[in-house]
Length: 289
Image (cartoon, rainbow, N blue to C red; front, side):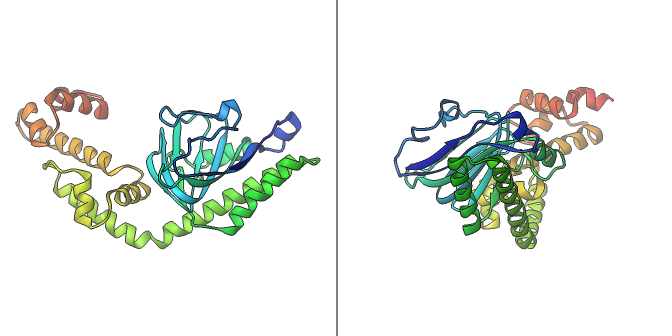
């Protein structure tokens, strides 16, 4: 069940700075095929393969749950009350859980206004997900956009552009304020995780083990760590290992192969490849120079 509108744009509308190309709502039932039939062909996709779009899309999940993965943002668990922003040219995939389905609102748009906000750092493909909670104003804004697109009265694109700006502003404000409210607890947990990882740099530990040490779920730990530091905990731990390898190459005569074993890299060859990728030179050249 859904209500979808696909909207042509013209050059005059583009001069406004932001134009809307699609808006809609759909209720995906448990076990239902996703995405349901009825979309324009360019918007249909296989969740297993993912897709890229030519425009931005802002989605709001008001019920159910599922998953999101993007090229730069990684994998995320989606819960009711979450919003996510998809970027043009950015590979992504998302889908509801087969056991729950979800209720999904979306609006697609493009223009120099949103491009400038991305360039200024207000929105980033590295952080596509915002935890908003259920918000009646958000829902009503999407519904007004759907009705406006259906009527297509004169200058309706300018009204739709205003609705997009309102949605983006609410999302940015609400998501940022929620992060600030959770900031003290997040900061303490992330600091504990960083300390634990630094102490464990010469051990073979997994990120779920770190989450258990902090007594939180792995999904929550990974999301919190990435939101706070800008990188996944596994990547942070890998960077710590490379830093430690550099110290050992500078300050000891331990053979390179043994360093790779001490730091629990899978093989010396993998260690050498990764070290070269991170530093621009091989471990042997780094030690020599």
